[in-house]
View 1 (spheres, helix red, strand yellow):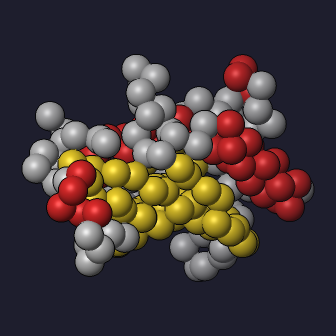
View 2: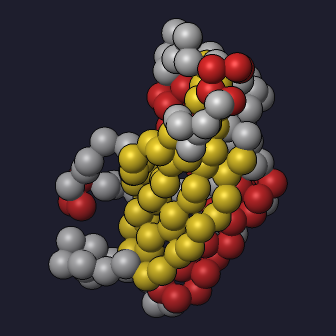
Length: 160
């Protein structure tokens, strides 16, 4: 069985792949990946790279930990968006940010492919334009989400 962290990452990727015009969104995301990829290896834009920050245990020092055997985690998830090279990059940025906000506001438990929630809350933290030599001549954007999940201390594959 996969760990809760792995299932959460896979569910985020699964849900981001559903952002398509056919599903009623403004844009269609071409690629979603979590392993580092060279900019010239990204074939279909816009593309999204999913990066997980540190997992912070929120209840490690309080008395509730030993009672329910639940570890409460918070993780910062960064979405690096590689935009297409088109005439109105600002409009594309606005549309993809709005689509991602809509996706996670309507699905705050980030369901997996079977419809099971993988966290108890996912919040849109912030977003800002992102441009480096790596993303030129394309635009980039960074979106940060904060996801909260519970994991059973005795069984790290069990979501509480």
